Image (cartoon, rainbow, N blue to C red; front, side, top):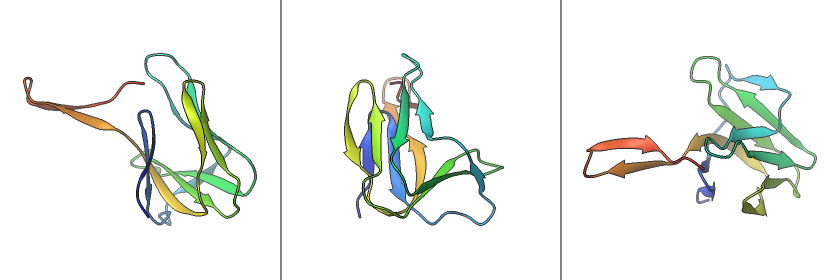
Length: 102
């Protein structure tokens, strides 16, 4: 399966690490510029957070789980296990990588 992307959020298929802790939160990431949230909507998913890296991980066991955001088209995230990361861009003039701000 390929990566899924919505704005500055990148969802990659990866197993949920054993040390990740379940969190009661459906928000995957807040937009830095607007404060809007990338959030999961539906039933049959669990969000985890790794205690050291603070990365969020997902386990989706049912079809119909949607990723929503006020400024982006919603789409379904298929069942599976994932890691959530921020999209990064490289500035060749400044010679640095930075997180994309949504």
